[in-house]
Image (cartoon, rainbow, N blue to C red):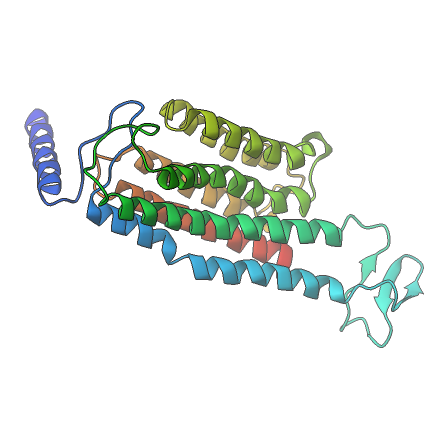
Length: 301
């Protein structure tokens, strides 16, 4: 009985995949060191699934910059006066109107907030802009000449290849930008302070690797993405002094879960129709989760 059910499911799945290819919803799976060539429908879905996030990401980035200015506009040394031995407040404010900031507190500096706001915001916007441009150019150039599984470095228009490299390298910088608020604005354990610069070094090394070995070692490239994306989060969670949901690690873990499940779908081009567009949906969900956590725990108060 069990074998009959399994055989029936396998047969139906096989017929479904054949129908998808016949309906131009999916192409044959690509081989090693060869790019998957999406169908026109997949090109459209790949482009639109990230294009719709460009404007929201720009607004979200500007909101973080504005909140940084708002957060620190009230804390100015030139107009402050000492009202208690160890606190600063503003003239003309009572305790209910103005925040009280300890002189020797570990509150992040304006420079830290400014760097996180702009680096995270820029990486967020670039992620969706570069991805949209790459898929739109790929879609456009797919009609220039007969398509073939010629691989990444052979017989590909240079503009397409350039934006493919940019698309892959942007992911590394997006990972670094996403972790920066948690590592710089959150109370970070001394044992992992080195992560603040290590994530950006990993982004640079990942960029160099992409320029040299684009699409040549697909599994290794995927493992590198997972390593850079998972290890800092695991270490930050292990060394988090509070170990509570108030620190934002719930949103950090939820976003990471979206990305990991998305990677599994990402590797299914030619197996699942619109796999890359579904991967884009997981990326969007992960980005929203991380942004919500960053805004809620570091900017909204």
